[in-house]
Image 1 (cartoon, rainbow, N blue to C red):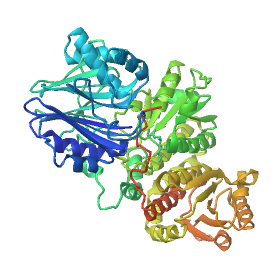
Image 2 (tube, rainbow, N blue to C red; image 1 turned 180 degrees about the vertical axis):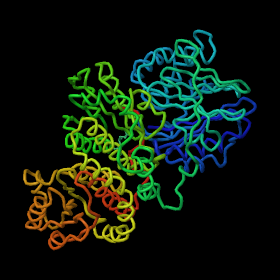
Image 3 (cartoon, helix red, strand yellow; image 1 turned 90 degrees about the vertical axis):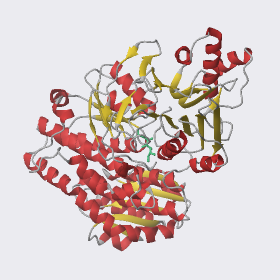
Image 4 (cartoon, rainbow, N blue to C red; image 1 turned 45 degrees about the vertical axis):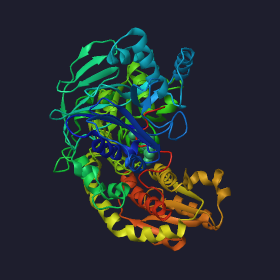
Length: 615
Ligand code: M6R
């Protein structure tokens, strides 16, 4: 949550910072601000409630000169989104400015102490306590800014990625991190810092990912120096990134979400490339091959994730249990970490996260590692904290996902889980060779089938969406592999249209939710021709008997459901276990079109952020 960006170099900082904020806006977008030090050493802060575009408007009449600056786009934790709580924050003397992503958990204690020492606070944020503390320590101990930052961070409990600047110091930028991501970009005589590489990639592909409790001191015309809070000097590897600018732009689509939905045939092909051999006779996942003994002998798998990634985990459970006969538990990371779970040293923990930065998942991984479990990560963001804090893993390789609502990352997570389960099943001999090969061949044609769905159904789903735009509630139902798809469909609709929606296993309906059904209630039900088909038809009959309005996702050429449902959306037939890869696509499109009809901000829905780096 919150995006931070900083620049020092030979160009004007402001345009680079604002462009960077636009790229980071998916991380939080309730207020934005910038701090600049001009060539005379004057330090100015401009900030406002609202979007980055509001900041640009606000800055039109301001002096935004300076070749060093820091900027922030906020997702509020402490203090409502307003002009005062927006970052950057000044210190008492207004000689220092700071931006922060994370939470200072002991801010109340620090603030009380500082107030006793005559410090005044303007905002309700936790962040202001940190910049005040830095100044207090700097003055009390008569030390330079870097030492003051080190000493202050030594007193902080919580998570942070910060950047600090000082009045009169146009050649000095200091940044630090703990549990919140921070990347240093290295250009020709210019340096960048940011929450992720997206604001940097336009200028350089050379980056360093800072580790926890590291501080980078950037001085003009010198190589950046990395030290720990305890003042131990560190050398970090420079990584060359492969993201292109093109991947960060909308490419002609109205929204990133629509672009990302339509990218799925390609992203899934990319995700499979080199992992399913051309003859479709084996899966080659190096993360599994390197640890095949462990996977062959494992007694239990625990899957940890949040949100959409948790839904992928539920489908992973079905896949591993069906293909490999390994018991699987799927847990919300946020529950797992606080409930004293039983973790055995021979467990395999699979952590799933698009961003690779989700705070609860990171903490749950740490707990599993402490207990001696082997942790496998499925992440999209290369070099992310989860990717670096796991023993092994697989990237989903779908490129940056900018829309806050996860789409292409979800289907790639499903694909990776399917490839993993197939690979382990092959090791364990729990599938016949004939079924193994059939499944591999089917997986290989899934991108073509998604292409078909996108080309055939988008217009009709757009028309259908107009009928339901003003519904107040939705129910999503599915069974077997399609039950988590129902959960995901409901989450997608809630997130971007703000319509209340619930997902249930279809058979659970009669245990309570059926009371909600009347002629006003739209029910999206996944009724493809699979092992649960007859059972789902009975569920549809139960709904129709109560006048519910049924939108059914059915297999191509279905006639039975078509005769009883109010509306149908067809998808091609596939193996039951791969149904979610197809049935999720129309549900993505349905929520997208409803949200557009409602004029919602599809890519940046209210209250949400792409990367949830606070617990
Ligand atoms: O980056 P992660 O996959 O760890 O994020 C987990 C959730 O925050 C995320 O899936 C969230 O639910 C999305 N907004 C869903 O669209």
